[in-house]
Length: 133
Image (tube, rainbow, N blue to C red; front, side, top):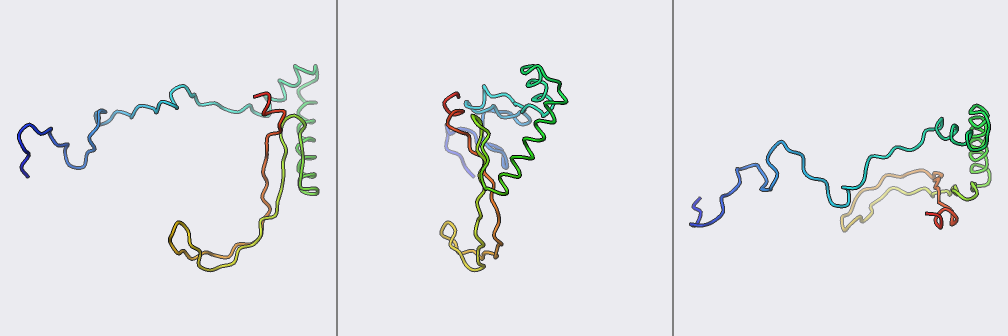
């Protein structure tokens, strides 16, 4: 094809035009620049921090954490709600079964399989934590 005089050169076929040369990673977006890869505290690290704070042995705190997890599981199963004061509330709810058939999703008609009812578990941060952060 013929390019008019003074027109910018076209990129090679199969290549997007852009400032970064091939082989170089694209720059991070503005919002992502300051963020670093963060890792959550492990169970051992939590146990050690609590042990230091409360002047207990790490093994004792680990057993307390295990007992707390067991209690939370039992209560969430039985009652449907468990709250760790000042931190988190765990709720369960029964999601009803869905029938098979045709469903309109984003303007398209799709065939949907039947799905059984299931229990959904969700965790919410409590107001005291929201106010602290």
